[in-house]
Image (cartoon, rainbow, N blue to C red; front, side, top):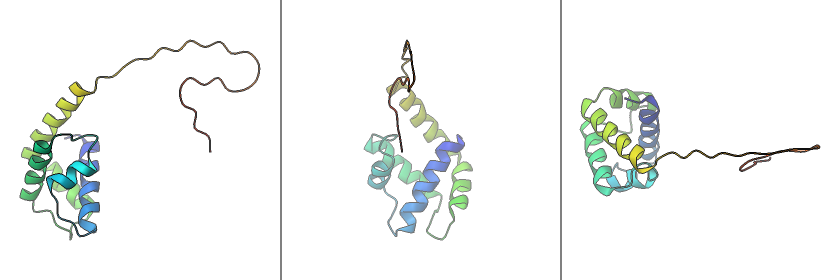
Length: 113
């Protein structure tokens, strides 16, 4: 299982449980909305997570380990990641710049603090 995916999900679950909320498809969809768009998928993920017996007594690391040891969850996450890759194709932008003098030559967004 992708360690980044499990880390994000474990962190989300830990935050939800820490605040005393119950895991549900709606909560997962609101927290992971940019990744999980379908209610059916969010409900399926919540169902699989409920089977893992995750509760508010577990640390984030313990939650992460339970996620990594679940073969059903692994399969579900692979399907979600495959659909996400198809739905959000990458684009390649080409920028040609000519710069004379002093100052910045920025292509895209520049963030200053």
